[in-house]
Length: 139
Image (tube, rainbow, N blue to C red; front, side, top):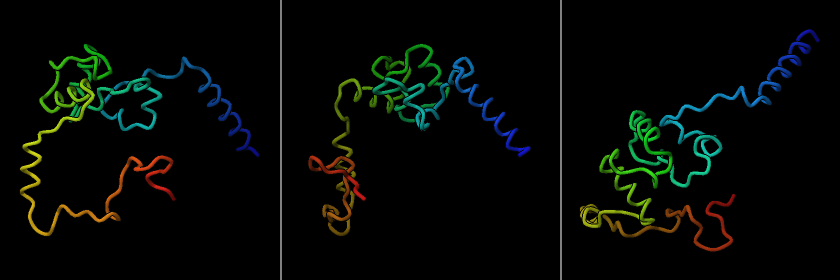
């Protein structure tokens, strides 16, 4: 019972600290934010395409973009971006997927061996359901 009293006091302290919004620290943006389970309720709240989606984004570049441009890809200029990041920026701003058809065809034509064009339906899964009312992975 001695420990139970201490535990109750600790629970009360933690509860009162979490109820006080002034105790919540301001988040510090980093490249790890996009992998955080709290991203959409924290720094990423209300963003459809946050700058964290940009490929190979360093912390230095992220800080520069956030301080000078903003959090949304559509609101930033291409000046800060690498060529790969510019392709992603263009895809977001155009609303279309971007790919190099010539390079894709060359890569596919380089594959040899058994018929690579055959995909058995048990080995092909879709993240998006193929039919209405069906989930991609049902237990």
